[in-house]
Image (cartoon, rainbow, N blue to C red; front, top):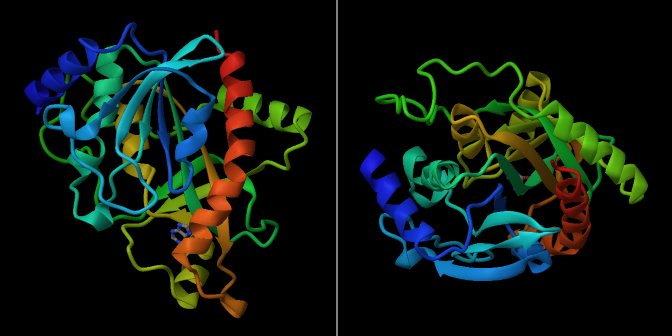
Length: 271
Ligand code: HPA
């Protein structure tokens, strides 16, 4: 595993001009977040040794290196999901590469279904905690001591300082930023009304099919994490509406400029 990480990192290092400060992952329909970047390189996943290749509609497959507000960014356009059949170690493979290349932050986005009745489709939610409901911890198996400890403290996964900056800047940008707990599931099934009641009871405000594994591995290797999800549909158990993937992508795309503006404003304030 280590050797694969090092080989892939070496390949990327030989192409990009400078080490990244920030690793970024953009979710369903949110690929154009990298539209705000001054792009130096676009590297196809298929060209990177040992890198998985993404298969879903709405997901591109490029690693994009460049700058946003003069901060150096390495962004994944397209990511890997359990429901596609990838293993947790494949899903999180790029995170350790980001770390190896020098990143200190991970900015991560995804589409999510909202449970909290105060939310509405199109809202942004900054994640302040998560529930890994996928049934698997991506750190199972031999520990990579070079990256982090065997038993990972999870008391404060999402960086409180970054959350605060995001909330302050949202106010300045007149974005009604919500805050809450993200529950990660495997998918590809969406939730039944009874599952939604159950998840809500556990304390989740939103649910999605990504993010938690990448975040755990990022925390393991000491990255400062900020996650903002787009609420693409509301899952209200007593009046459930059918979730259509086209609508999820459409809402995510519509929210994408707002999210980009917010991310950029946070990036500007990083040291
Ligand atoms: N459930 C799970 N994942 C999702 C949803 C949802 O309602 N919407 C977007 N991703």
